[in-house]
Image (cartoon, rainbow, N blue to C red; front, top):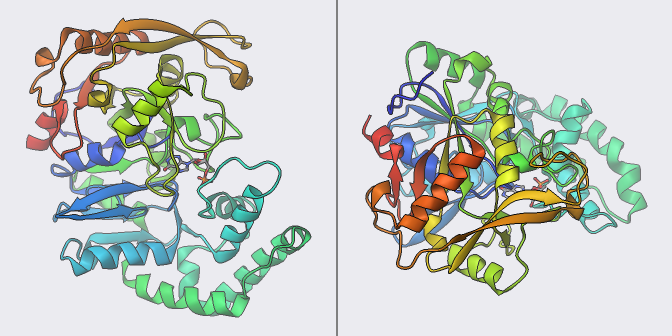
Length: 433
Ligand code: IMP
């Protein structure tokens, strides 16, 4: 579908780097013109920060844009749900009059993160080959799902079945956990607690794929909000240093339960530089004072774990790859203002020392990659407050144009600061649609 500048279809918003690209803010911007936002992958490992008056709240499971009072928030079956986290978030918002319960739809088929998943995650992370997970039990929960021994939201509503499933899953993990000196949670206590949580969630549980289908048939506008970023995708990311779900745009079809042809447009969100939390290769990482400057200027500390994020220059090779595997129509480039005042800016345009054609993103060996940089002049003054692209400093425009040329898709949105409206580009048109 050609781009018309209106929210005239269903849009998937995905992160193109290692998460934390600022998807929440982009989704929030467009949610004004949408009828529903659907989360389709990941779980409480994700986090987006809400600023409500002088209170700050990190939401992990409630979709972005939830502050728009008309919006239905859907948590689809491709996600993994920690019911206590979800309930706490909804209650927090409800008490402040921000989210009525009737705006939430939760998939009956989504898998449940159970206490033993967190035990396994923590044991692994304190073992010999940690990857720096968020320790929210995400990987082990997806493992139980793929291993056909998980618990789904609908099971919470049937305590007898729940007990059998929890027991079976724990039996699977018991030898592994005990061999590492760990202890599994009490089954009865887990069943009692989770059945009670299930009762509270029950009124909001439904077949969300059916709900989305009905919404699309009746002409409603739906945003699909990706979690994490393409480089953390279980298939397409820097495996094995990845999360356990589909962060690519195609994950929306799988995780929300709809045909790919129902998605009209895919928008990719990338920071104007790169960050990563947790371990894994990161060729353009800056372990120097400039990297530290980026971290401080960008407030680069994990929303979920508080960990300092690793920072580096924008990696165009990785970005072009992410654009390709997600079929991006256009880019939302966030946090350009963080680059204010840098004398020079570097863009990674190739890798040396890897077994891949120049410009290609390698399947392995990225840890040995030596980045090849192009250097562009930075700008003086600030991009904040610029109302149009033409008002940006020449050097900032040149930076955007170089990215577009390399990656092959246009930049339709530029983030210029922390405030809710601090951006320029087509997003403004969307919000007015
Ligand atoms: P897990 O998803 O907790 O299993 O963590 C696997 C990897 O994904 C780790 O490197 C995490 O730091 C990373 N990760 C998971 N969720 C996010 C996120 O929302 N933002 C950034 N990194 C994430």
